[in-house]
Amino acid sequence: MAKIRVVVVDDSALVRSLLTEIINRQPDMQCVGAAADPLVAREMIRELNPDVITLDVEMPRMDGLEFLSRLMRLRPMPVVMVSTLTEQGADITLRALEMGAIDYVAKPRIGITSGLNELAGDIVEKVRIAAAAHVKRLSAAPAAPAQPVAHGAPPAEPPRAPLPRLSTEKIICIGASTGGTEAIREVLVPMPADSPAIVITQHMPPGFTTSFAARLNSLCKIRVEEARDGQRILPGHAYIAPGGRHLRIDRSGSNYVAVVEDTEPVNRHKPSVEVLFRSAARVLGPNALGIMLTGMGGDGAQAMREMKDAGSYNYVQDEASCVVFGMPRMAIQAGAAHEVLPLSQIAPAVLARLASNPALVRHRI
Image 1: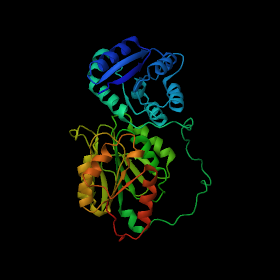
Image 2: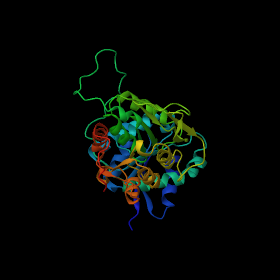
Image 3: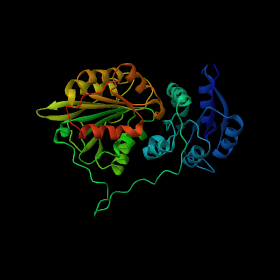
Image 4: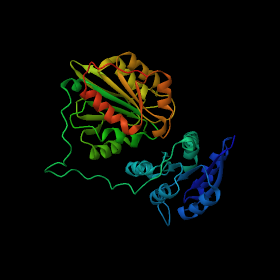
């Protein structure tokens, strides 16, 4: 089998050397080039045609985000961001993912040699995932970060009947991993201000989910926030599992509440989709709507089947629209899906179901 051919782009000679060594230790990978800046990298990519590049952010002559934007417009390819700035500035990471980067690894701020070697397993796993990912061309420069909505008349939108009262008892549960930040955005933005509560587990490390929630909150009609332990889960709100913590749903009297806990990883993940979906099966039953989005592995697949068995209605993203068709594939194989849809059709399908007769017969696939 052909090896995954990687070009490393980083202005640090030490980092280039370490990443080259980490990649070349893998039997299925080869570092075919290492560039000190994007202009050198551009020529290497033309000459070597790599399968994946690792890309730093802060570099001379052209910063990594500008280079990424040009690359994804002109010659789209899988990119893994490897930079200290992706840890210190989560907004930069989210911008990189918005531009089309597949994933990111945060370089340690001190102890570069030992730190990168400790991250070696994470780095090569993400390179492998990137090599198999679906990459899309960036059609235009991403929009500037959304500004807070000014007081006054809201933008005009087509009239829509309010969702039925029953829908306020329902909770939408979303799980995602690689490629999920943009997929979640596409699901949340169409949701009306009176939508049912939404709870989300996206595989993310500590320090990123606060910025992720703030970004989504600036774009959505619903309120989006990082979940807090013990808070009431309310309609018109979306709650994101904090990085490095599990999120599950529980009852407190007649209310649903968020439980945020620092327990062991599940399926190697923390937060884990399995934890969220299993609690939905146990606590919500038929009041749940499940959504499985793009991601590597099988986290949440069996628990989504438990949701279905408990009465939830479940949507799974289709292969063509996924960055990585791992978690959705496993959910389908587990028999957890009622509908398998392109990403662009998931939010409309959920809203149509909520607005329809609750006794509507379910069409199983």
